[in-house]
Image (cartoon, rainbow, N blue to C red; front, side, top):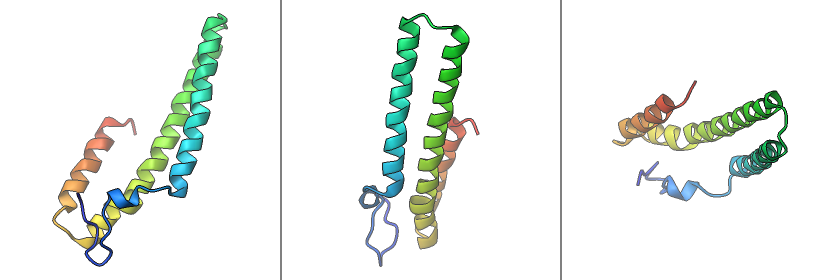
Length: 106
């Protein structure tokens, strides 16, 4: 596991607790879940295709928003902590971040 700072004795896993950002992300995901269920109902009820596509677009945007929230928290805590500590794990966490970003549509 990546150790952030010897003085802190804080690992990345220990910092994955109930941060306000996590709570916000969970709330948003529950809203998205409701949106997806709404889309399922729309399909069952044979609603107008453009209305369904509009809702699908809204879900994509909402998921992107949650992803950005989590990415920001990751950079502020995990990435910056490892870089500030100047540990040997610096390149590893940067590579990990670049790998994640390469999969995203930015």
